[in-house]
Image 1 (cartoon, rainbow, N blue to C red):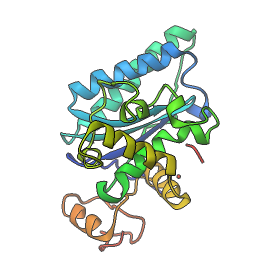
Image 2 (cartoon, helix red, strand yellow):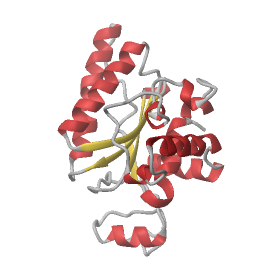
Image 3 (cartoon, rainbow, N blue to C red):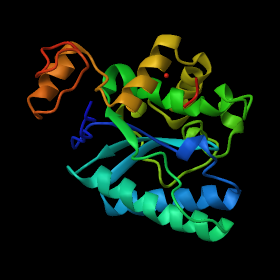
Length: 233
């Protein structure tokens, strides 16, 4: 079965996953993680992509992004991927591929899923046993939203600003949201939609989005869909 072309629509949030080949580690030292963050920041700015959330695990990473141009997301990810592989191979005396094929991504409906996706990303290290609390893990955007440090790479989505009228109120509300966690069904939906490329949203959202693209958005019908519309990864 031919794989779906990646969908990227300006102005909508996208959940992105990039994994190491054969689940091998893609970060062997803190210097690797720091280099990855530098590359994401540089190319997100260059390609006009807002970074809402991120986490760097041992053998993969997650990003929550909103591109402002049709090809900004793909250009950003290709540049980051190429330059990071050069860094990793040079730093660790290796050669060859690092990634498990192309990056995975999906477009999500902000209202019901964006804050859940942020919490899901923050909680990846907790699910994997790398940290007891999201705030304990240094390689994610959680600390920015919890008021523990300022992260210049992060651009909060408007839904985050709606959590409270003051920085303290927003930080406290977001910390509670992460503490409450995501449901098993949310986790499964967020993981599977990103890995399989199906849009994550309700029927009305899918119907409106379908007017912008000829690509199939859901796994329902083989033609243009009607209005029907994660374990740590």
